[in-house]
Length: 126
Image (tube, rainbow, N blue to C red):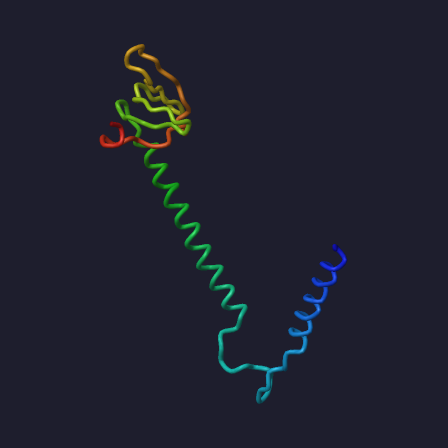
């Protein structure tokens, strides 16, 4: 069973190789140029440049937005942490944020400032 599958795949590979190697050479006036098209290497470089620009521009924009949000944190902001905890900021130090998570028992948790995922808007917190 395995021998027949192996033989069939080898035959398919040989057919593919035969087709690619027996392709006729381009006939041109001279020099091997096919006539004014964009060189493939230039096309690849342009595609990579566009991909790089789009990917990293978006990433830098998100980083800038997050940095601005971190700088604008203040007491009274309702926040969501990266761990999914909702609460209200009651204290801010250099790299730490104290968040009240329960009004009834006055439970507070200290987080690293970078643990804040986002500031909740009024319609999100209800």
